[in-house]
Amino acid sequence: ASFEKNFTVMLTDVYEPSQTNHTVDLNSTVNLEMIWVEPGTFTMGSPLSEVGRGGDEAEHNVTLTKGFYLGRYEVTQAQYEAVMTGNTNSLSATPSQWPNNPNRPVEKVSWEDAQIFLTRLNAAEQAAGRLPAGWSYVLPTESEWEYACRAGTTTAYSWGNDINASHANWNHGADSNQT
Image 1 (cartoon, rainbow, N blue to C red):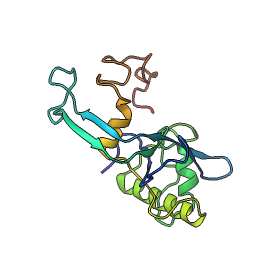
Image 2 (cartoon, rainbow, N blue to C red):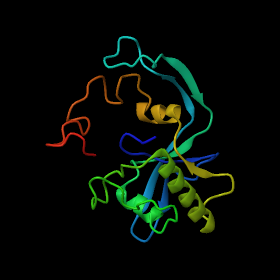
Image 3 (tube, rainbow, N blue to C red):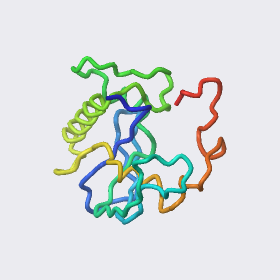
């Protein structure tokens, strides 16, 4: 199973944030910035009237009882390379279709590849003494991701109900498949 484009990581089992932001030092030049997301309740899914709504998106209330740190951005090519260089799993540390763009999201990464990335990240942070016992870097669940992306709103997007180039990387040149 492949990700459509890219992925974000989160730090789980954090009970009391020591700060609103958390930074992971991956090497001397690459950091992974994370933001604190408070626990809370939200309506997941979308109303029947929402344009583009899929059939499996029925609205329902979800309560997240624990807050978490979420990657401020998708995992970048530089972050992925910093963690995956020297891996023994025969995975490329530079799998992206648009290489040599360190700040672009890494893509062409399977779910299994992301799990290896997380295993290596957790091991490195534990060995460095920067990851408290019981804490771990994981992929966010669907409800955690939607909760964070909604940012307390009830519209289709965090900024409203329409999407265009002023809101997102909607029309980004000749190749509409680029990250």
